[in-house]
Structure formats: structure tokens, C-alpha cells
Length: 276
Image (cartoon, rainbow, N blue to C red; front, side, top):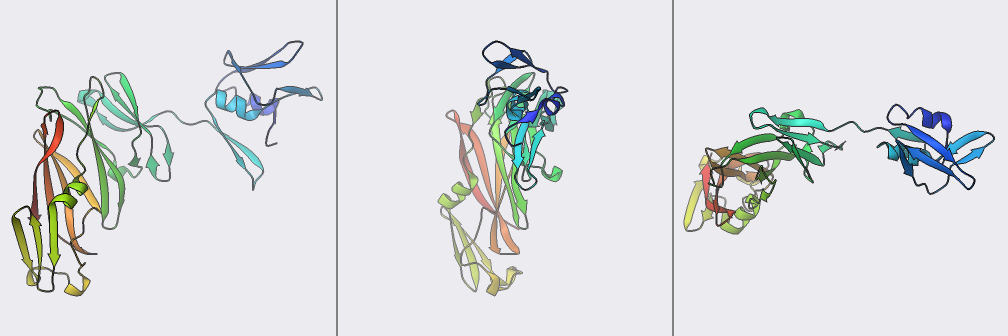
């Protein structure tokens, strides 16, 4: 059963694609949708019945085959077509999911004006966090880029996004520096019982304990960040926001990171702390 299926099982697959057997004096040839299919075990006639490997037929018509050892069953499943998960109609752009597994869509397919690009991206399946597509001139060349913001994870005190900026005519991606790494490289913090200090370059923000609702006993030893990362556009400017977390339930504010396209790449032009 694991290796073979009778002709009746294979016949049930013909709704998705036709198959036939061509017999010559030496061997039986398996033909699916007009194409010869090579199999690891040749088709055979046993007790007057044609026996063919179910995996070979199924995969030839684009179906997935799995073996359930507990139920001792061969499971054949024909995947659905690409699923649209985000659209920008005025720009003729659609983002499709090709597979869904463990609460994630991956990989994805970008369509722009009839052209397609397969990308190794992912987005959570929760419709609340559906991808966002925008079209703006972020590079200053007079042409709009495609901006696709994906949510890769969410939960209590967590929300992470990825951003992809594409040249629509070629699908070439313009990389955006990681905002979490930017904060790591440019921000220092000092947590004391009386106050919290956050320094960026030569500028230090001091927040005294009486202005922080969370009890000092719940404070981290240093300001945390990275659990939440979001992106947005303002006009033709790209921004990232990374909250500054002092305790499991309290955020002091946000690090605002501004990007500009300089010397053929996106660069961080400013990072500032904005207190809540």
C-alpha cells in the first residue's frame, strides 16, 4: 500500500490531470498529461490489474503525497492555487501566498502589471496582520518603488515586521538596514533605581522614577528592544519604530529611525528617542 495503488485510485486523480499507460514488448510506460513519467519502480500488471506508483502519478499532476504510518494510509492532496493576500489595485500589484503552514504564508509571489517574481518571504496568516503594499518614490528617481511590509510574528508584547522595497520594472530589491542593529550600534542605556538614562550620540534623555508607572522592582537591568519592530512611510520618507522596553509591561517610548536613499542605497540618516 505504501508503494503502490491500484488503477482505480489513480483514476480518481484524472480530474486534475489525465494519465495513460503505453505498453511495448519490453516495459510499460507511464504517461501523464502527454508527458512520459520516469518511476523508481516500473508499472506492472498483476492479476490482470494495472499497478502504478501513486506518488509518481500524483506528483506529475502537482499533488502532494504523504504516508500516514498510524492510519496506514496514503494521503494525496492537490494544493490550491496561489492565494491573494494583499493588493494595490491602482498600481496593478498583488501579493500571493503559495503555501500555508504553522500559521505562516511562505513562499510568496509578487505580481506587478502581469509580471511575476517568486520570493522567499513569509507573513503570518492572521488577517489582522495582512501584508501592506504601498507605492512611493523613496529613491528620488522620479519613479515609484513598491513597498511591501510583512508581519513575521506577533504576540503579547511582540510584533515584528520585515520591509521590502522593489524596483517595479525589474523587481530589484533595495535593502533597508536592520533597525534593531541600528539601535544596538547607536544607543546606550543606564538603569538605576532613581532614573533611566538613554543616550544616542551626544544626546542623553533622563527619565526619573516618579515619571515611570512601573515599579522599579520590575525594571530590566538595561533598556530592552527588538520585540517590536514596525515600518511606515511618511510622504516619500521611510521610517522604522523600535519601542524601548523597561519592564515586561512598560515601554518608555520609541526609537524613531529615518532612512534616505543615498549613494544607491538606503542609509540611516537619523535616530532619535521619543518618550511616551
